Image (cartoon, rainbow, N blue to C red; front, side):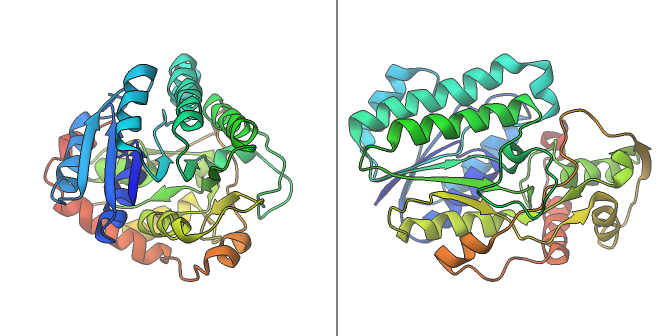
Length: 322
């Protein structure tokens, strides 16, 4: 089986590629190494993947329809995992155009390509941020979507376009909504890496909403395993899945757990909440467990311990600046 992963140099894309390569799949990675955060971290991820003989990589901007079509047509994949996107919530307020181009326009390009080459499967990684703030938790796949930032709005639109455009085809479309993914090789703008960097630099770490934000943290290797397991799931009508541990914690609790595993601690600066950030992410994972029988999620303590160990051993700390 030949598998294309867009965004293979990204955080989740890298871990998914590694999981599939361990299972002896032929993986074709596509990425453009954009500079939202250090391209050196992305290059390091690809360097690791290139150690596998069954991995091939193409530096490509998916906004270029003609080049993308020619490359994917030549590969003729059985499955496309579309993980490439412009991440970041706060940055979406500063530069909404890049989200429209890299999320919506790119997804539309891939929809057109899929209609021509007809891969067996097209798997899209959306985001838990499409739910926005709700009154009832945990969030089910059927919950109303109330995105409160531009990043989430582009993900919601991509979901809608995919459902509308591919529903009358033979392509097996599945949409995944991961909840607050963390772990080794995470993006530098995410909580764990940014906190560990502040500890190392003896700086002050800003905690918004006074640490009362609640997040359903999900370990990245669990996410990769789940995405892999879906390769064996046939086409089904209810094709949207939360990926979450369903064990939410407040950010201030998470920082206390991190502090168990670090030698240096940093000062905290408690600040008000910021616009565009969800107060709570807490997902229901019953449907996911029913479909793929995935039972054991990595505990937050075990996941944090692995993340801190990776951070301590990672040599190029400059690539973790944001």
